[in-house]
Amino acid sequence: MASILADRLRSGECLISGWIGLPEPLNAEIAARSAFDCVTLDMQHGLQDTASVMRSIGSIAFGGKPAIVRVAVGDFAMASRALDMGAEAVVAPMINSVADAEALVAATKYPPVGERSWGPARALTVLGIGSMKQQLETANSATLAFAMIETGRALEALDDILAVEGIDGVFMGPSDLSLTLSAGRSIAPTEKSLDEPIARIAERARAAGKIAGAFAVDSARAAFFRDVGYRLIALGTDQIYLATGIAAMLAPLARRA
Image (cartoon, rainbow, N blue to C red; front, side, top):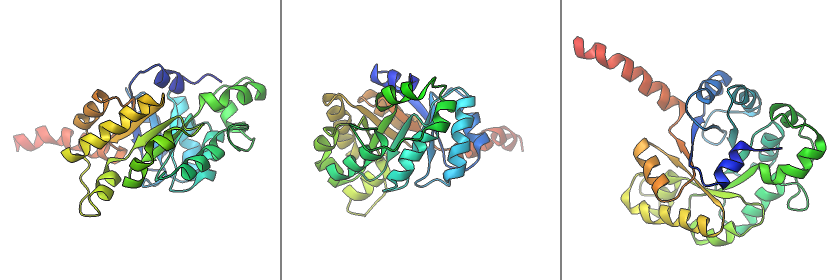
């Protein structure tokens, strides 16, 4: 199994991902056919469920791009299922400790690294894998497990989380990071005070030989993340794409009124 996603990220490329929360496979396909390098399906705060993720992974593959799935908090069983469905990476939120990271690895990596159960029938088709032998020999390196770093606890345990075998990278969540670092006083994902810890996450990931990913609320933050070393950047959401597209089309008409 060759992974365009894993290979490109490990080579140091910066990839921009679409973000799809609405449970409509056509939205995922449209994003895949755009200039995005990959597409992420959100099961944590988005409206995706198991059925929509299964169908959307196929739509993303049909659009020629790799699929990533963010699972709900603690849903490591779904992380394994997402890979069986053909996702090339999973993002697990609220990974605050080595134990959390090890649970993610157990679900997403085959033995001897983890305890992932065998059953990738759909992945073989979606990803064009030639044989079960090829899948077994290559899946642990070709599919990626990202631990979300989005709390003060996770920051304190960052180096230990990065050191867990089978964790391929970390994924920074700026909204929850701002919420926890402000002790619940604010949600400010673009707050300047976050710049230092955000840059530190990327630096520590780089030092550990792992991939740093992040969610960017806008293009300006995406550019900042890229500049400080993030290599997988999810930009906006499908609801934002739809709203901004509508606004852009209506704006010239409003000016003429």
